[in-house]
Length: 198
Image (tube, rainbow, N blue to C red; front, side, top):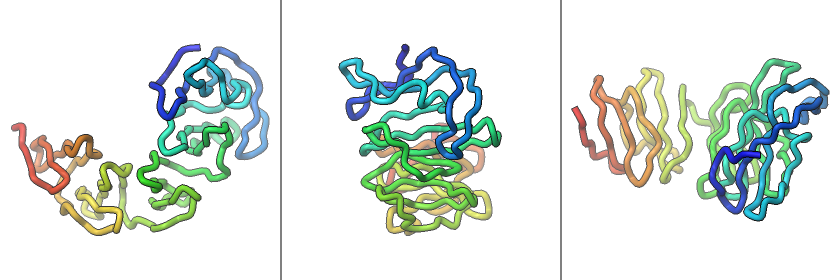
């Protein structure tokens, strides 16, 4: 086994080398999967999931607020889904076209009918976001792309905080986000103050 991410909340995803037929847990089908298994290990080396259960998963994030994100590829349908798993190794029975980590009890997902939504930790839809593209929640703000193709930022009350003007707008880290405006690269803080690099 080899680690693929750092420990978070006491667990880390690791790669195994077992190959076997596995069940598609979202559809109940059996199919061959020739890729390596992904499992979670605690800081004592104990596995909380088994490789044979999770060989069909192609990516596992670290845990945040009790949940990890798993990218699941159904060979039977040729589709990719994102699901959440709790620390007991249980896959929650909700599949999305895209999913992001939880932030203060909320996460951005893209539903199976291609709508961006905010869900809570009970996987209830709190709000449907009317945007063409939506980032993960970062430091209380969400980058969103409007119908003109420009990004701005909304807060968790879904109020526009930083106007739509950027061609690129990344999530915030330590109060700073990388953006692009009229071909110029730069940075903004969570108040919208800009710092240009060229």
